[in-house]
Image (cartoon, rainbow, N blue to C red; front, side, top):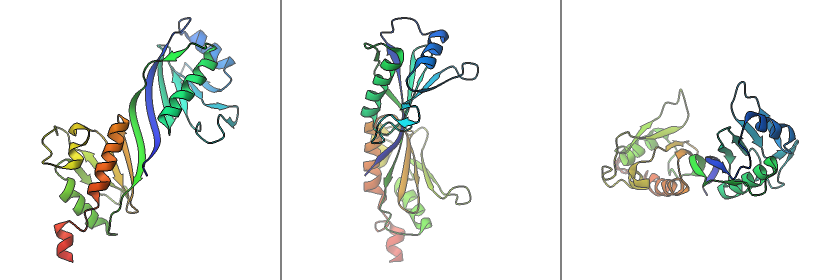
Length: 227
């Protein structure tokens, strides 16, 4: 089951009753019922953690580690999100309580990066064979590297310049229109970490394609010859 471990989203504050100045951000920082960080000398944004004091905002862990960064321009950055819908709802509630304005709204949130994990059935326990199989299946669309001295994971990166229709029928390359910048880190345990997705559709579509196509050990010509 794919799991989103961190999503970074951006938006803009709407319906502000007064301009956002450093003085107002400082006032919100001092009066906010949530934990905040505001040090304009080193960082221009005010960070609001979705926690009350040392206690979690929610009892089910939904609000853990979620942070909203507010900038003087009104730009917002939402990070630490596991459930995008729930994260956006919490962000709106927290911003309204922080700025003491019930009609405060946020522009449509846009994903900047989605990081998640999923499981892959490798069907073999020899990493070198897995690397060969992945190169055989995805080598046209992705650069596949494995350097155990630096990282235990097999890393798949999108080749630059690949356009739609140049994938040679590769299912993974055709996902997301062939323009994804996502990176997949595949561990020998079968755990895979995906990052760089810019939408939920891209995130789930790439995972679906990869999990369907990655179990190729039994299909790879090299593997068949070994049998």
